[in-house]
Image 1: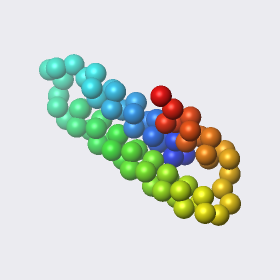
Image 2: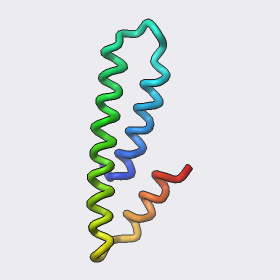
Image 3: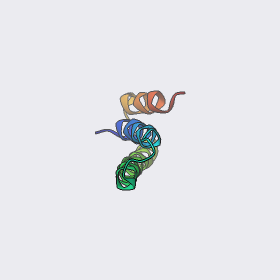
Image 4: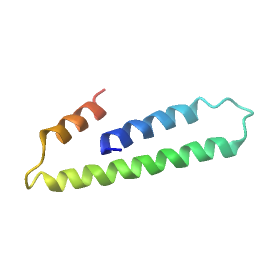
Length: 72
């Protein structure tokens, strides 16, 4: 999974967690939020690696993937 894909998955999981109805076990919410945090952390690591890569050769594919991932 690429950095932008981790970013999108983190956003999806946060939306999913926020739509868990009241009355569902709180551990389901906590697990979903924990999974979102893992994906957000991996996205951050990938973005940091890409930033450092900007000082050397970096593919346009990675730049474009991030632009699409963070576009409103």
